[in-house]
Every structure is written in structure tokens, then in C-alpha cells.
Length: 153
Image (cartoon, rainbow, N blue to C red):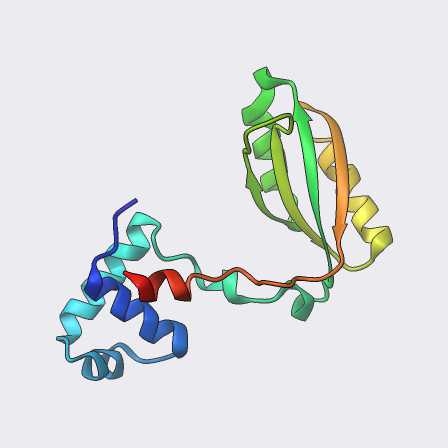
């Protein structure tokens, strides 16, 4: 993934304030050429530095107000099959591979505690997953953020 320079950070900070700014208005506000802003956004998107717009959607607005993290243990020889199976579950928001006893840490959403049970079972039945442990999240006290990191650069 590419490192962001000062101009990239200025562009992203402006978009963080108003993500629907047209590129021409953004360029004018920052004193940059429209082509510069356009090419930098395209490069950041292609490199993975800029996340998709869907990450800004609150799952509760989609009727999925219950969130949890599922810790999964794997048969290591089937990790690819497990990840493929997890990708097929729409309620799986992200999957991380942490250090320690847990093989995968999976962030999920559901419509209710009963639906969370269903989602957890779908995960447990994925190929290669040998054991799961689910912890329901009661509330988000600090949401995902990068604004302060962008500003410090």
C-alpha cells in the first residue's frame, strides 16, 4: 500500500469533512488542478489506501443493529476454504488474522440476538473452522476514525 504524502492527506481531510464534494470544487478549495485531485484519488483507490464508500454505511441503518466479534479457531490446512466460506456470509463485515490463540477475528452484524446465533452458526459451519466464540458488542464508544492521523502528517 502506498504512503500518503501531504497533498494526499489534504485531499482526504477535505473529503472527510464533506465526502460528497465534487472533484472540481475539491480542487478549487485546495488550490490544486482538477486532474491532480482526480489522479490522486484514482491512485489511492487502486492501491487500497482509500476504502470503498460502503464502509461509511452504518449497518444499523440496514436493519442490522446487533454487532459482535466472533473468534474462530481453524484447521490451518483449510484456511483458504474457511475464508472463502466467510466471504459468502453477508453479515461478515471484516475478518482479521490476529496474533495469539485466535486464528481469525470476525466482525459481524445481525438483526437480533437470535439472528446473531444464526450468523455464528453459519460461521462455525464454514469448512476448516473447528471452534468459535462469539462476543456481542453492546455499543461503539469510539467509531473507526482516521481524521486525527491524516491531520498529524
